Image (tube, rainbow, N blue to C red; front, side, top):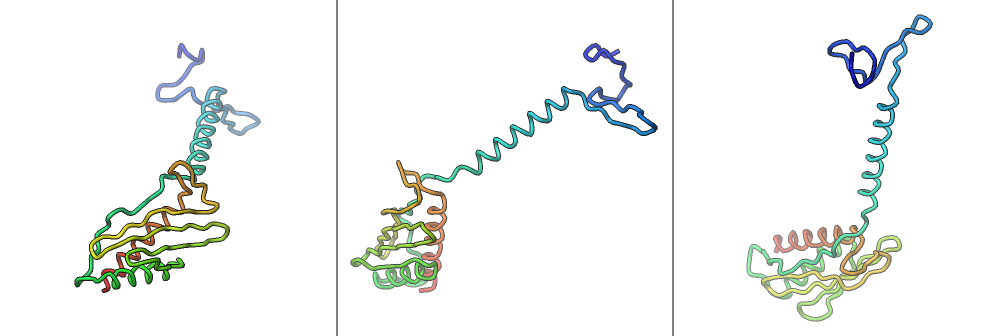
Length: 163
């Protein structure tokens, strides 16, 4: 006899559930403890999934001193043009402000982001400037912004590689 359940159990068979004949058919009865355990695990999984899906902000991603890698020596004008082409291909409005400084702006639905892209012939930087409807606060921003910046960074690298 199993001391925990007060019922007899067969060797190799758990007391987690029982099968009982009722009106000529087998009915599986699940213990109350098993039901509570299942409900508890399901509830915990739902809370974890909900929490993971609600994380909409992340630390602001800035590109700092990314090397300008080109098959030949690049001039300031070459780098500026590569940055402008990369942004334009991704839907950014790229505005050269002065030599070595381009302002990029992207607007998607009700969201906008503005970034400063600075460069010389050796490195480039992408730094957050401002945004609307991206929940920027205390160095955190909506995670989509970081994806846009990472895509812009990749686009710039690709354009520089084609010089």
